[in-house]
Each structure stands twice: as structure tokens, then as C-alpha cells.
Length: 140
Image (cartoon, rainbow, N blue to C red):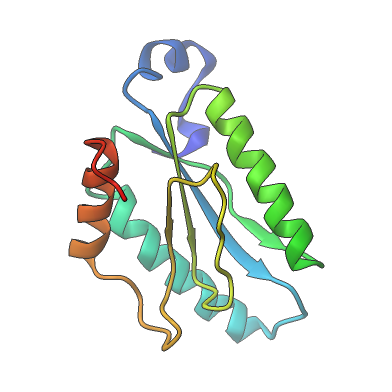
């Protein structure tokens, strides 16, 4: 479910069920050519589909973070935002990226999905198992 699909009135009713926030991060640091941005966004969409489609009704997708100047500052900002999302009512935060150079390690992020160093996207079974393990309290 997209953040923009939830009204103030609905949030009070739905928030006990919508306990997981999905935050897409493009992580573009430098100027990229239009076709490169398109490729990244298509890959990001593909990863998000692995979560949004099968887990609709429990996951709220927030707007993507696209640009940053400094990787350390990006990590700090993402950590703060994810902590605030949890303080605002989400129990879990999942971050996804199509940037194989971006690896987010933060105590405020419960799961992180992105392509491997070879550029290969995660598989549906891997994503599904990780999310179900998180929700059942079995995540490592």
C-alpha cells in the first residue's frame, strides 16, 4: 500500500495491521545519464514488487530517497528517518535499493534488500523467507 493511499481517518483503523514500512533508496550520488537512472528505477521497482505484491495489506511504501552528496550523511539521515518511522508507529522498517554499492547497516533497519555485487537481484523466495522470519521473530 502506498503512503498516499492512506487518509488520516484510515490510518487510525489500519495502523495495527500496517506495521511494516518499506523505504526505497536509489542512492544516486553523482550525475547519472537518463538511461542509467531508468535502469536503476526499473531494478528498484522489481525489488519492491517482491515485497509490495505478496505482502499488500501489511506494508506501507514511502517515497523513494534518490540523491545524496555524502554517503556517511546518507547513512546518518536514513538511520534517523527509520528510527522516527518506528517511533511513529511502525514496528518494522525494510529498506530496498537497486544500488549495488549501497549497503545500509543500521539498528533502525530490520531488513535490507539490494542487488549482490554481481548485480543480481534477490530472489522472491529469499525475500519472502526473510520477511516472514522477521515477522515471526526468527530473523537473525
